[in-house]
Length: 419
Image (tube, rainbow, N blue to C red; front, top):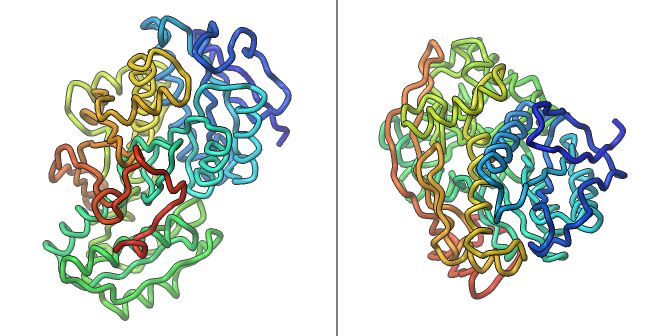
């Protein structure tokens, strides 16, 4: 696919789905990325096409909703916000290329978006090398300790701690893990091992499969033979979505499943019941939330995108992350990277999101936020079982002793790095 980078004028009534481009620098005029130009430019990178587009498109739409709202309300520091959009096409190499161009040629004030962990890690390094602010608005496995990266959704060092305790307490102490054989799947499995040990449980089996695998009969047989009390699932992408239908066809829906992403982005709508029956998730957000803030967000979103299948946690995080950037810039009085980072590290940057208040924790560059324990019933209706309020990320700071206001290792840590 020919790469096209285009400027989206968000006040337009037409919102174009664009593919990546490398030769359009419209919108550069008058902006020098220090807050003194006539526009504030957001470099937005997303999997608009490719294997991850099923998750990337709602996130892209959420970013459009956020920027449109900001401009309707007067912009940031009185300046219009423009998004320069780059379709990473579910390809880490294209994410690297896009980040370099957005920073060096388009001179954006912020890099944000992204979906996969490999893409995030590649762009994180480029942001560090060029001292550019990077917002990652997506649930992920946690552990990044970077001067330039801020994560605005929940991370698995808090999410899986809560979820593992709930599952072990309710269902039993024998855990089986199946996941994708890449960073998110592997690190997620490592978190489960860590928290299983803390709660007196045992991982009795685990398997990590290439992203291209779509047939799971052998894996399901292994799980049946092990007979776990709980199955943790960290599969990803279109091919691996096939697991759930095969799982249900094998008559396994009575075995409780747990994950950090399924359900929270509308999987219960896309899959035919009872494929996700008995799935449990701790999530930042679900469209089924009945709060006024959630209802207002859904109404605004569906006014712009009435055919959106589901508004899930990653879409909410995308919207909220961009709104949190607005708060930080206005507190700093500039888009200059170091000053915005200094502001984000004050523990005072907060936004009342559709999921509840999110507040940036300066020491960890992660947000303090609510978590919701969600269960999928046999008919694929959603039950919100419990709310955990104002969960603070503590693993980096308390177990590893890292305070990003003082030192920046600029690397991703995993549970095996804990003291």
